Length: 338
Ligand code: NAD
Ligand code: TYD
Image 1 (cartoon, rainbow, N blue to C red):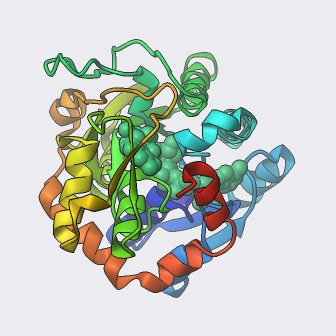
Image 2: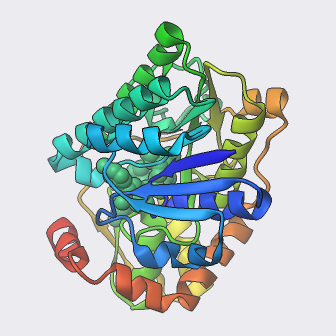
């Protein structure tokens, strides 16, 4: 099998390539990534030793480039991770999200249709379902929960999902979609909650917690997400959406306190800052469909996963320094002013 993995120089895409190359050494993997602020060559340099791997620098919004690549390579499977992925950035920059997440996805769909790929898998998010209330722990997102987005990020991802499903219905393209909860683990860019807090706590810099810190997310260790996508590609039914969750709901404050405990740092580093506009209260996933139909369930507990992740960031200071060179400090000062 020949795979195209887009966005494979980012967090989840790079973990997915590693997972798949270890599991399927006979398959071939082409990583297409534009190397935006979120994609880094030092995330993927470890793949150079694999002879079944190639990197192609390119932008999925460039239709002609995408068509030519598909014509030349004849992919069997396409897995689309490439995206603008940070809600905070989407608050002031909708257009980048529409371009990559919507237009980029439709370019990949057209190319997949024209060159008759055997499977197009779209990496989606649980954020398309909007928010759940904090006082109803019994409520969970199922695949039947209506789309009800809050941010330009989630709106663009929901739009992409709708295009993907429409290519199944209208053109018979063999598609699947996964909608996963919040990931954490090695190689996550330090703009998202967990790596941001680890990196700042290591350096004794204040930890900006939005609002009262009581918003809830369901955390999944990145390798569990990778195994879910693998399961869907190999066993999933085309035309279907599968929710993927980590069975680890935590308030943001609980997450930050756990990180501080692991690093033996003081809770006084926590700084409550203005809330994010449109901040979704709670995400929680019902993953009974993928569990009962495909036999997948997450295997990493939050306690083990966070210990592993904190340890990885301590051991990989060089990676961290490299990805936070360039525009990172400017982003942080503009975003937090602290
Ligand atoms: P990320 O921001 O770490 O990586 C995105 C990658 O896409 C980067 O390498 C970037 O260079 C590349 N990219 C961006 N625009 C591109 C373009 N126009 N052409 C080619 N490459 C481009 O993101 P991530 O956290 O790894 O998320 C990957 C996917 O998983 C996204 O689609 C995201 O919506 C989805 N997802 C993420 C989470 C999460 O918690 N991080 C949860 C559920 C779903
Ligand atoms: P984030 O990692 O941005 O993921 P998402 O918003 O897509 O779920 O944020 C996770 C939670 O952490 C979310 O409730 C917002 C909160 N948060 C903070 O409190 N402070 C921060 O600096 C960041 C980046 C997030």
